[in-house]
Image (cartoon, rainbow, N blue to C red):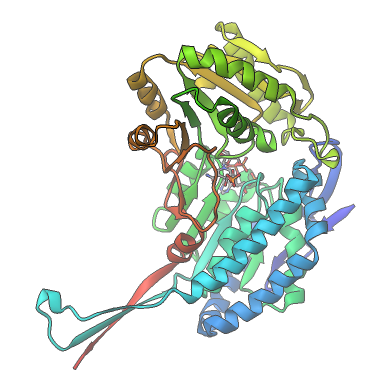
Amino acid sequence: MRQYNALINNELIDNGQWLEIMNPATLAVAGKVSALSAEDINKAFAVARSSQQQWEEVSLLDRIAVIKKFRDLIDKNKEEIAQVMSEEIAKNLKESLAEVVRTIEIIDYTFEEAKRMEPLALTGEGMGAKNKLGVFSRVAKGVVLAISPFNYPFNLALAKIIPALVMGNTVVFKPATAGSLVGTYMSKLVIEAGLPKGIFNIVTGRGREIGDIITSNPEIDMISFTGSVGIGNQIRKMGSTTDLVLELGGKDPAIVLDDLNLEKYADEIINGAYGYSGQRCTAVKRVLVNNEIADKLVPILKSKVEALSVGMPSENTFITPVIDEKSADFIQGLIDDAKEKGATIVTGDKREKNLMWPTLIDNVTVDMKVAWEEPFGPVLPVIRIDSYDEMIKIANESQFGLQASVFCQDISKAILTAKKIKTGTVNINSRPQRGPDSFPFLGIKDSGEGVQGIRESLLSMTRYQGMIINY
Ligand code: NAP
Ligand code: G3P
């Protein structure tokens, strides 16, 4: 039985309280992690505060050298981390390992990007200033609270933690409960790597029990959160005076404007919609297409959906069980609502507990929940709209604004369409996706606030410190 400890001040916490983590594939216990008290959590923030100044005074290259030891231990243990992840969130082994490798690549790129965070030097002559030299450096904000979601428990944790630490902040990290085994696996690596005491603390417990205690701590200088809109809005209320980066939900549309490459479009849509069983914020969560093209596209989508392997993570199937039965019930509810209102189930609508067969629904109309809500599961609605203007209107009416895809071989028409779409990013002729990780990643409207991506994360966790020299 895997049993990992929370980490405070480089000490493994054992307060006798444990949280059982379920394996979504077997529905058995995958392991246990510490369940922390308010006192434990407050201590984590206290040591993060008390260690921050000294950590910031370490030179950038020396900070990188220390963190690289931690990075090298991740590389050494990547297969085991992937195994833990696969058991904990039912992500297939291949994708779990890919997540760990991608995280190492993010860490390496972050090291290099941090070296380019050069100060800004200004004279003010353009404003008539004389004999002034302004030097504006990026310095640490202080104590960063990093909160990650279940679906990328390693990648979306360290994509926050590493830029924070590299720039001289200290961190209190709260992993998702489903993701806490992966999160606390790092506790021993932190100690083994010899990171200074108190700079990287890992606190565990159910968000609904400790979330407010964590987000209301007065030591917090910045919160980087990835998760649902509901929790994100709760944090907005709690952290009123704190800098926030929130990456929240999505309802990414795939807008198909021609039939000139339907096989390619369908491959992108299928991978975008059903990757990790649709449990990705950037998943394709609706297809907007006119009737003429839909008549050709839907049969192609059907055959590709039915070719997707379904099973257990250990078998490396494409579709694996969703995170828990509560999620499966919600997803099934959207499918049932669409059926009741007259939609066509093209394929799928089959379930064994939280293993859900990939479902494709045609003739979805705007009165159906699945047209607007985020399933976070393997279900894709096709909404047939003959008017181009109506298609853009429906795309933009969503409460979400994370990403979108436009499929069109006429690049001018694709660009002009992309410019009309109200999202953080529009992908032309590819599925929505966060990568490459060096690109800015952002959501607007209910999809988030602030920007992720390697350079943007370095900027969001630092502030200017200006010096003006008069001579
Ligand atoms: P979630 O339920 O919102 O949980 C996210 C994190 O918040 C978890 O660590 C959770 O801990 C914690 N939390 C829960 N209640 C809290 C509170 N009151 N205060 C502070 N933290 C609290 O989201 P999820 O189910 O893990 O992930 C799925 C959602 O995240 C989807 O909506 C998806 O679209 C979104 N997401 C967005 C992105 C993006 O980059 N935009 C990426 C991935 C996921 P517990 O697990 O202990 O509750
Ligand atoms: O939901 C996780 C979000 O960050 C998407 O990542 O790389 O699967 O597009 P990706």
